[in-house]
Image 1 (cartoon, rainbow, N blue to C red):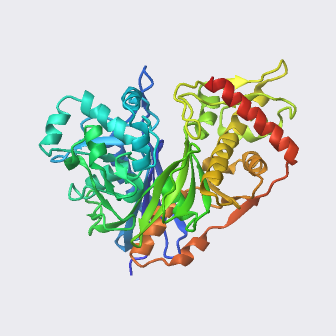
Image 2 (spheres, one colour):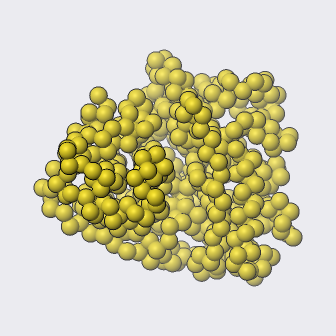
Length: 491
């Protein structure tokens, strides 16, 4: 019996492979970073070919590291950085340009022009998403407008476009499958949430030929087979594809309406399962599909933050205040508790719930005694403040009480951050004993699809719990100060 599940988690900073046993336990992990290509204009790119090569490398490495028989791998699941947009040749599978990363705002002028033509609200009603250069629709239009020959070749059926999941599926299957899943499709700003298909009007609006688009498949559907570039003696099925945040929601077991999770990474995604009917929010959060699994669609409310874990990288790489993220907790705890400085990390504007692309970062409220410890503490606290903004907006939009927040990602190892998060929200924060929730979700979905796992697999995670300790009046005072700092940055 084949008894292992292989999972690829292709994220913003790198690619990791995870191997799970028949009980859903993580056996081994292998990682490989890829280049962050940033030019003088602040455009952010990745090399899709490097990502594919790294995917093959980590998949092979994790199996060899675990020392298991590769013939016993039952299936592959994929989770991926979302919104990052790829364009490639149908015949060769070669990318025609670098991928435009979700962080890149080069398509802002495209969105501004459409907003001036009063398209913002029709787009939001169809897709659940605010018109923004964050999403692939405008990024793909930028490619069509600026990469020579792509439009002409697209009309001839020679071009494929998509998010990173569809790129990997195409390459892993040797070009036999151009597919995406419902979770990734819903993040493109080209997919109609109500009709559950690519929207012809929006494709025309963004200048994308329908022949370029991937077939949309259930998140636990059949995505073809792969031999991992010839490494496997016999191919294995690709039986799950989920955007990374959706994978984390699934891996966290947030399967019922009202259940909410936050993934802390370079940026952050906060998601609330709202069930089988979409809710179009007016509170600054967006609506997406969680997944379509077992033939049933679930929707989510979601808020995205550009800079959470990336703020800690900024402390290390740019300010040189720390040598390692491991130093942050001790410095934050040593900060003067009476200091009232706030960091608003609008390095490339603010995402949900403010959606202000013109805002710029600032440290607000410094005094003469504000020093290194206080700046580090403000950087850590801004992560929790931004999460709180979104959780509050979601609770109001859905009309459903949020009883707990399930969290994942590297920054959740910081006990100071997790306690402050619980204090601000006034609810328990539950941290699993594994960080790799996106990859875990893809693995669980793939394992269920091939019959290796049942629903009891969700009990494989153990959780630590943080409960509120901060007095309500102090919490409210701190949060009011944060809101004032944001207002100053937003003008």
